[in-house]
Structure formats: structure tokens, C-alpha cells
Length: 340
Ligand code: ATP
Image 1 (cartoon, rainbow, N blue to C red):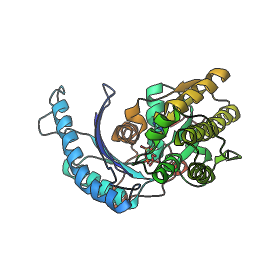
Image 2: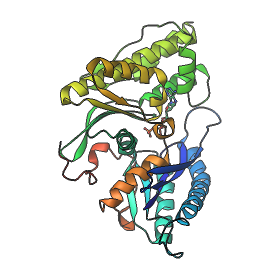
Image 3: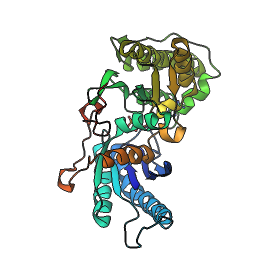
């Protein structure tokens, strides 16, 4: 079986083919790069309307090439067996384009349509390639920050941001400094040259707040503290908060496996802190390849294949997007009988 995935929640117009038998994923992405400032929803949607059809056509050509080698497949059979798309959370104008493209392809080939929660896809792709059974998951992405664990048929949100997403917080600081989007990689590069400065550390219960840290970081910069030092302080503070809550989640659930997800997860300092914490507890950490950490259609196709196999598909008329789709709203169909 072969599943086409389509992603486009914010900046990455992306399509992928996942071949179940070989467990192979091919991804084609076209990122939106704002000319100035951060992600502008209307501009991002314009990018999606141009880029989604073209990445989809490229991946359909890939699927056709793969299908040509299928033993016993008749030439008139479709090259894909399902279409999975990111249904939310994300920017509404972008999601609507992705949804329209997915419905069109599903109808063109008369194959099932699968609506995937983007946050659950971030963690499921890590779980899939880690081989872990029931890990705690830290999703450190642009617009979100979640610590999740599976229990009684759902991914429960154990901790989350109370205000802005972790990547968006870093991006807001770099915008203030005058750097182009995305800011996260620039914070990482500059932090390597900096000395630590103290910034407010805000963990409340199991939840994080990043907005006060961002204001304090901007004030430090405006007061003349070298930008490298502020970047270092930001990384140490924000990532220590993510690591603390992840550790508490491991401790509370008794789990010994942690999976990382999301674009901020590409940061080596964050990976290092999580690795050290896991080593100290005797827990295992799985860090997916970078192409699966940042937004990508590969994770949509991998989870889409599991959902399709479980019969968790959508009728076209019931396939509306959901820009506020929370991970704990998903009734997990593909782990039937797994109630831990
Ligand atoms: P979501 O998955 O919540 O919809 P998103 O669509 O914004 O988020 P992601 O691809 O998960 O996208 O993450 C993008 C974020 O990752 C951006 O904020 C970017 O600055 C940040 N980022 C990318 N590389 C790094 C890095 N090396 N260090 C820190 N942050 C990074």
C-alpha cells in the first residue's frame, strides 16, 4: 500500500509518498519565506495555493514510478491507496487549500481520504521510527509546545504553553533584533558564541509561559547586552523549562521513553539537554531525522497509513478543516486494544 500525504498548516507546502511495505518515505517541500516580518496568514495561503498543487504533482509522479514496479498491480489501478492531509491545527486559509487539494486527489483516484491531526503526526512519526511503544512526547514546534502521553485511547496533554508557541517566541525575539524568519536557527548559531544571561523561568504546574521571557529578552537586547548572550540565555532558559516538564512527565507516568517532535526539536542544545536528562534517569530518547522534525508531509503520510489501515477515513462532506484541532480531541483508532 502507498499513501499520499499533504501538509500545509503554516509555512511548509509539502507532499510525500509513504510505501507501507518498504517503510520508505519520499518528501517534496516548498517553504514559504516571508519577505519581512513573520508568517503572514494571507501570504502563506497564497504560497500554498501555488506550491501545494506542484508538490502534489511531483509526489504523484513518484507514486506512479513506484507503482510501476508493483507485482500484480493492473495498469488502470490508482498509484496510491489513500490520501492523508493535515486537518489542523494551523492557519485556516492555508488548511483550506490543503483540504481542497486532498479532496480533489482522493476523488480523482477514488481512494479514501484521511484527516490527520498535525500535532499527533509530529509525535507518531517519532514513535513509528523509534519503535517505542508508549513514550512521553515533547512537541516543540513553531506555534505550539506540548508534552503528551497516550492513555485510554487518547494522547493526553500533560503540559502545554499558556501563551505563544516556543518557536514563535524565538522568532518574535529575532524579529525585534532585525533578523529574517525563521529565527530559531539564528538563535542557535549566535548562542554558541554567547555568555549566559538570566531570564525569567516560567513553569506553572506542568505548563509553560514564553511571553514574559521574550519581553525580558527584548529588554536585555535594548539595554545593550550582546545579542549572543541574550540568545544563550534564551536557549538555556526555554529549553530547561521544556526539559523539566518532560522529566516530570516521565516521572509521573512511569514511562522510560521520550520522543521529540517539532521544528524547534532540530536544535542541538535542546537535544543535548534532553539526552542528558534521559541518561540520568535511565530513560531512552528518540530524536527523529530533521526532515521529520520540522513540518513535513512524511509524518502526515505515515500516520495517515495507520489510520487508513484502521478504517479511520473521512467522507468528503465531513472533511472540513479544524484550525484549533487539539491533539487530545483525536480518538486514537490505530492503537486499538492499547489502553495503557
Ligand atoms: P506547528 O507544528 O506548531 O504548526 P510550525 O508550523 O511553525 O509549528 P515547525 O516546522 O514545527 O512549524 O517549527 C518551526 C519553528 O522551528 C520556527 O519557529 C523556527 O524558528 C524553529 N526552528 C527551526 N530550527 C530551529 C533551531 N535550530 N533551533 C530553534 N528553533 C528552530
